[in-house]
Image (cartoon, rainbow, N blue to C red; front, side, top):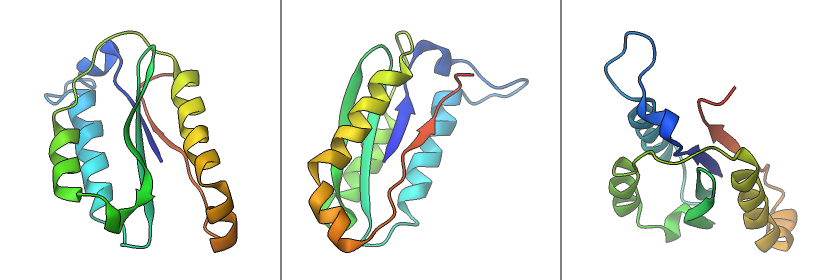
Length: 117
């Protein structure tokens, strides 16, 4: 599961850069999708002061990847930052499929893309 920071600070650029942190994070997420297999699961949680489920945790083969990529590239930054709400929603996604994941023996990952320190 990717937990993507969409807080207002993501509108800024890295030192001397042209692209915003949000644009770079969006592009990185889209590129990650190109490396997943049909049998992998993917989920996307967006967070600022609230958490938003952009893509529930599902097998890649069951996701319209092209539409998801377009949607990701349209994500804009705004609001404050609460990593906790993003983390909690990501964990809830795992809880929703816990019995299936344990049977399959897959490793689970929560990956934060954020500028928070």
